Amino acid sequence: MAIPLNLVYRSRAVQYPLLTAIQTCDGWARAGIELKSLKFVSGAANSDPMLINGECDFIFGSHISPYIHRMNGHPFVYLGQTVNWTDDVIVSREPIKSMKELEGKRFVERAGTTADRHHGNHPGGNHLLYLRREGLDPHKLSFVAATSREYWRDVAEGRGDFTFSGAPEDEDARAAGLHIFPLAPLPMVNGSTMTTLWPLLQNRRDLCEGVIKATLMGIHFIKTEPEKMWKLMQDDVAVELNITDERSLKHLYNYCRSILEPRMYPLAAAVENAFELAIMEEPSIATKLNPMSLWDIHLLREIEESEFIDDLYGGNVPGPGAVPGR
Image (cartoon, rainbow, N blue to C red; front, side, top):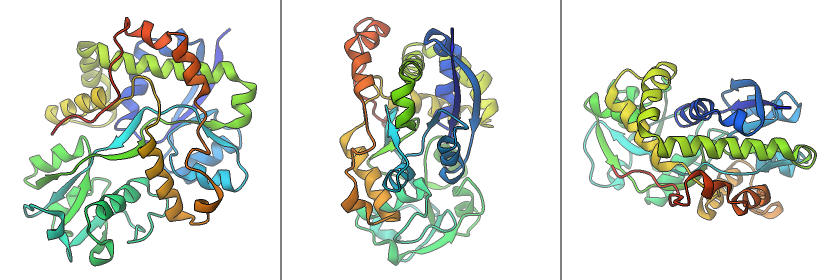
């Protein structure tokens, strides 16, 4: 008998192609799962209570807020990780050769993000870490609230001097005549993190194992069926994500094929950076939790030791996920 699953996912650009791949390769059914509901829910403040209240079984996402929930007594747990990097670029009105040239400029960011806090906006937190890494003090920038989900449009229309952008929107910004300054990828817990609650892991092991296996099969499909995946991108993903430019769609396709983790293990540096973002929001976390406090990968290890992953790839499992070169 199939195991029922109610699933929430948090972001669309990378998660929707993966979810579509799982469905297309019959991953849910092959893992013994019946997907009863699949909902896109924007924002941890909206999705996390659904998990706590039993409205869903898993969230694909919620990378920062669970640390705060864990500290406050809610037993959140992560079981696996599909993306360990964020690969944003700088989009600017004028060309730059160094991030230092942006000092004093108008920085387009989500409303509410400040020089010290992201206020629950994970991408905004990533951007603050990028700035710190590159030696650019966020306090020396003028923060401008974005008026569109595509921040580069505010730059194009003169409301700001620069912003950050990721796939596939960076290609749209380039096509609009803006300048792209590439950055070294930032290790970060990202994409479809297998987020659930400890009691569910203890009491519904079969569901947890099935979710991990179905996701592994979706990643396998993306990485090993390029023609079928590209057709899926054209026929389904492009329509759902409203991508009309084939170059942008191809960019997202290549990005997904490169960045997904075939064994679904978290990267230590990615976990550390996600923990840093949690500390930004709640400094007391630094002395009360360990970065690994939320992670339990024993099921993932058992699946790997059973040779399930090796069998998927015929013994030729790709290396860890890495962003494509620009």
